[in-house]
Image 1: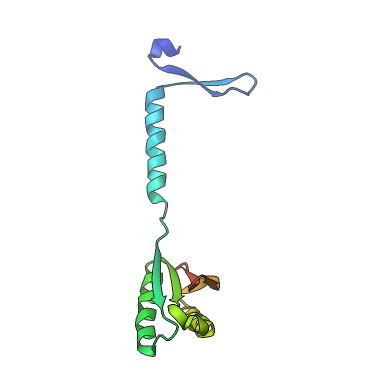
Image 2: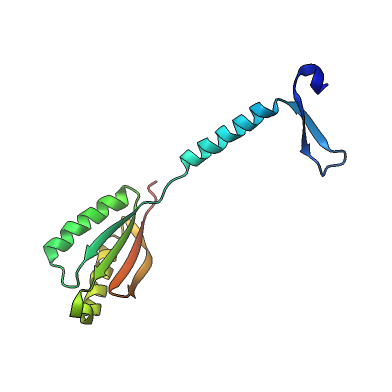
Length: 135
């Protein structure tokens, strides 16, 4: 029957009893499958991570300025990586750095939720904030 129609006989389910076959144009089927996969891939969202860097003794004005940027990043749907960078001997101000990041987390509570609490990694104290889903 497939030869008469100029099409291919494709085995759909070989484990069934009896095996299920379908008459179709196999090349066209593969092409449409690739097209569907490509469309799904284009709809998948890519996660963007934006970074904001603070010092342990960051001033209030600088803090507000960077907080405004953080709000913009979260509203755009990007994840935020906020970190305090300790230079030289400033590592003794670990508590100040943690207080700064926790204050930022509290100020950004309505825009995003904390994904990872402040954690010291080498000379950096890092915190991740994910954007809240807008409904």
